[in-house]
Image (cartoon, rainbow, N blue to C red; front, side, top):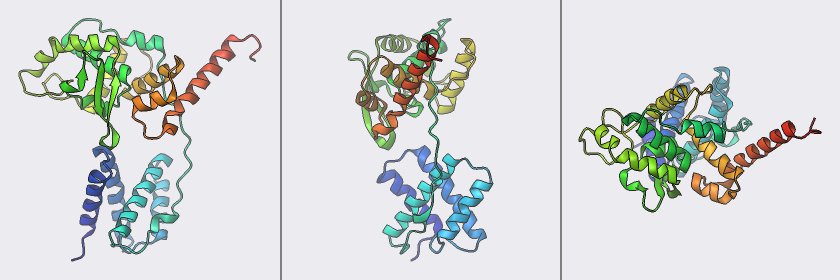
Length: 298
């Protein structure tokens, strides 16, 4: 029996989850790309088993005409390459029509980083309410460990060791890593656990570390909203995001003498080339300081 296009997509998404260990967010992005492709091919009177390179070229041309960003198109290229390679390996096609797709050249933007002084200002609770103490503990963990927001909201009580000083998280590809926690982060987490978390849990049985006002695990959107309000409360002119804490964590480590390999391991980057963007940022910061301070820099 020939599998339907819907079944092919489901099989591929299962492959990405089981064999590749890709996150739910990544799989959802791939699924959106594939459903857009199926809709486009249907309009052209063909399907994934029979489309050719010209169909895929026109699909991407339409995406470009619709104003899709180069990064989005590049990700879609990766989706199509992986999907058609899967179809070929599983015997659903004899060729891979995505072989000749051209990925647009991407300019790698430098990450946005908060200064050490700004970070020091942000990491103050102000009024010691349950929510403020939770938020402070959460931000200290973000800055002290460089976790992704998805890793932060997935932390369980058993993932944090306050006596030893580390946090354990599950990163991309379901890979586990251990990251040290700073003394201040441990103190603020301990203070959060000592009372605020129990009151926020509302006697619900959950082992998730950071909870919202309803006793439920914080969501990605919830953390983003908290940071936005936190920045406003602390009179920060720029908007802050969870990833800015991760970028600041890496940059401040390198600024203060940490080696690249250690930072790579703490960030959970599979390829050190991903971590090297922070060295470019550090060099730019040094150059900026030089130009401002040296009398003959101009």
